[in-house]
Amino acid sequence: MAKVVTLGEIMLRLSSPGQKRFVQSEFFDVVYGGGEANVAVSCSNYGHDAYFVSKLPKHEIGQCAVNSLRKYGVHTDFIARGGDRVGIYYLETGASMRPSKVIYDRAGSSIAEATPEDFDFDKIMEGADWFHWSGITPAISDKAAELTRLACEAAKRHGVTVSVDLNFRKKLWTSEKAQSIMKPLMKYVDVCIGNEEDAQLCLGFKPEADVEGGKTDAEGYYGIFQGMMKEFGFKYVVSTLRESFSATHNGWKALIYNGKEFYQSKRYDIMPIIDRVGGGDSFSGGLIHGLLTYPDNQGAALEFAVAASALKHTVPGDFNLVSKEEVESLAGGDASGRVQR
Image (tube, rainbow, N blue to C red; front, side):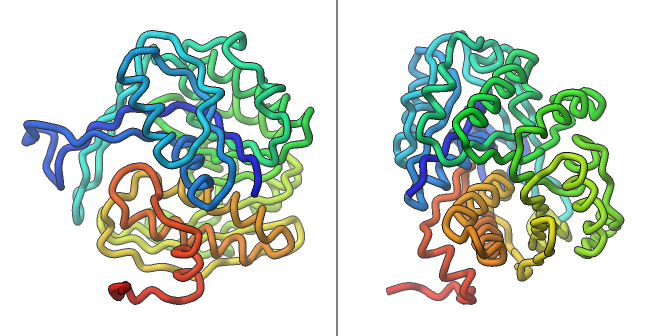
């Protein structure tokens, strides 16, 4: 299988139990997760050699974050150790018309303060097939943005395919700052993944679709996909299309464009959603596996990615803990949920 490298921040996630509100909670459920770490776990579960690159403190909580990755077979050889803290995010899980809420406490985390001396990106990219990052990483700090650029440059020197999940986070930066950082980085990217908000706020491309009204017709994306392809030279442009009926009921499909043809996946009706955090990351992990496995069949690659992310909505925590066989079964049409015995 392939060597897949991801770069980003893994955080301590503190969740209010069940659907309790923060003000009701007397304790929190503890797991670890973060965009690119979640992608690495997915790729490892599908049989790839997945490497997560970050920086974490030497203390026990930093080691807990490392161990959470090792548990699922992710290689942690290139995680630098040092700095003062692990980033934290608090999650209140919504229900029905009440949305989920995230509160960040990640300023000054080890990866936010990391420097180029912490990483040998040429060594990291040696023998790699794929490098993935997201817009969250350069949003963490200017230092992390510089690390992202250096990693992309090393990936290109070694002939590695580069993918990005645009992942705009309004609690981390403004659209103006995002575009100033993200647009120059697009010259390194082969596969661009995002949704309608990401494309607009990170790159300035707005789809002709009434997303707020729940109308995610794929045709509304054709023009911006073609524009993004022309401006940045991507090999693939990919978007998830989420219909949000409530916090616990979503429609879910995706669209891919290779410069010649568009392909729209089948649609999944996901209800009830158990945990939608990490849904986009599970899509990216599924797409990476799909494009590596079916390089000449973008439709098969996309169907694997959408099925993988649909399953993630049923799994508590950040990580998508499903196997390749389970994803292939759902993509093949088995959505009955019958007990397997």
